[in-house]
Image 1 (cartoon, rainbow, N blue to C red):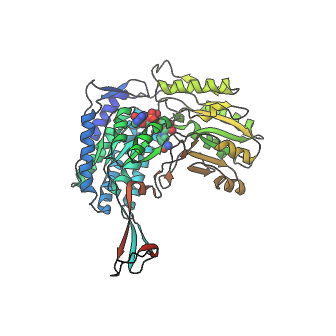
Image 2: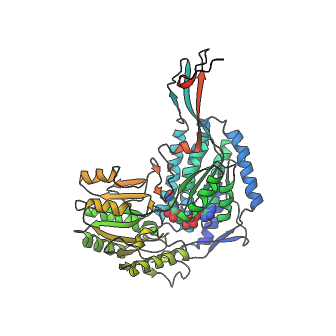
Image 3: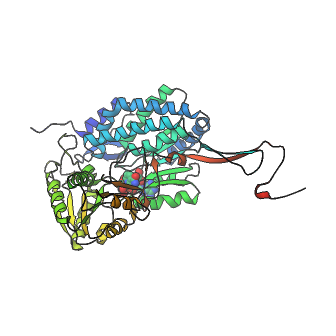
Length: 507
Ligand code: NAD
């Protein structure tokens, strides 16, 4: 018996009301379409220039107050937010499913990631420590201190509609910075819901300044307005490389700082010593999970020539078995593509594979009769005899390219020979191969895994990638330093005035 779900639009409104988000306008403003059935989930009204200006001005005022609140007290706000997120987890995850099309377990995982970064940030709020440094001058003390930076703009993509904001916002808040969020125009409802959840925490915290966190609704022009604003010292932008190419010079021109988290084109090397059953599970999850719409999705499979047919056949068979359908159905492993543009790009990419001498298995559109305005597809496996131009681009859909290699040097060369540098992995039980992959002449990516697929990072590490992926790092490790300004201070307690480097300037 097929499960009957409420219409996505009715369900989305119900969740927004439950979470205390402001009511959506009846049908004025911009329509937000859900990927499950392609129908309109609701409308939102974009902020105009005056409203954006007011939100930035409020963030600047909030900064003056927030930066002098002791960091552990700022952490208390994030601790309360984590509590509110735990209480709202199921509802927010359901909204992620409705608006971004993620299956229930992945949507819950996305909200869990928000909770995890809250916990991380709370701990961090007591560890924003600097250094003491040996001074070369007698009777002098030198130290390095980290101070709050200022309002942070977060521009986010549709595919992690809430977690990426949380990575940035939780660190920014404990670092003493207000946050202005411009979510993807494809997923504004989850942003409004998240802001409502944060406002509950703000109400419990009591004395947080107005304007500490705001949401700017709009498309790229709203993002550009934030990128150009000299009052915003840091712009953290997640999305396509095309977006980063536009945003980076706008921020640089005014000497702002940017964190760019852009497209990936992630690879896995499967070596002769690999545990093939483990590799197969990693391949299928990372290539087809989230319908191939993760920045870390597996897009290129580089398999030793002795195994390439065996591995390709197994992946093709596994792809065929995956259940594609309504992401609310617990049996579904592959939900829909976000929209028609994503489907068109998928078709174009498969055509390019064929034009360049490859063959494609799978990739059919399904559920057309049930959902003529939604885009459900079977994952596609593209077999190529050698690397081809079609493998240079990120196609944000479940399309996996396979090529053979004959030496480990060649495998690493293929892995690195793309403009992007986000995530990478090797499947091997040979310690020498594993270490070579992780060494200076190995993978050139920001993320390099052994016996794990390229997707599904933990928040404890710094997340991001090289080359056209933008070079930014977010989330764990010492990423917090980007949300603060570094100050080197030297104090003279000697009564004399010795100059550095032995310089003499006798009056
Ligand atoms: P997108 O580039 O279309 O949009 C991302 C965000 O940027 C949206 O909020 C959009 O309004 C804004 N934007 C677009 N052009 C802009 C401009 N000129 N100025 C200012 N803002 C602008 O990306 P998408 O389709 O939402 O997301 C998919 C892409 O995001 C993929 O390429 C994926 O790899 C990438 N992504 C990267 C990471 C990462 O951490 N590296 C994470 C998630 C997604």
